[in-house]
Image (cartoon, rainbow, N blue to C red; front, top):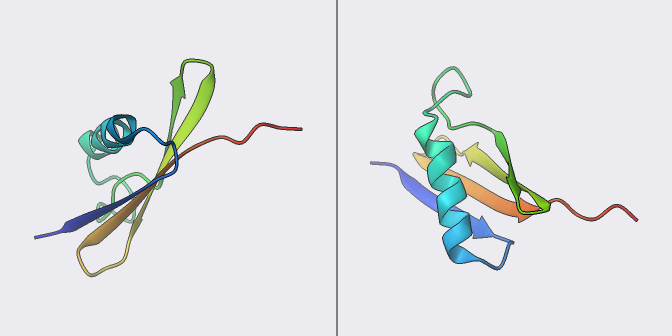
Length: 72
């Protein structure tokens, strides 16, 4: 059984869970079918959000959800 870790940097737990669920629904499409998509991008209102996934080969998937930083 695999484990999921979510590092949420958006400040919105429900949004982070929705984005991770969306990425997972795509299936394991990275690393020859062993991992979820490495990076998925989403438009949330006027912001761009990203969901990344890393598989540590011990059946743990670590997701990070964050907004694109503003360009200055």
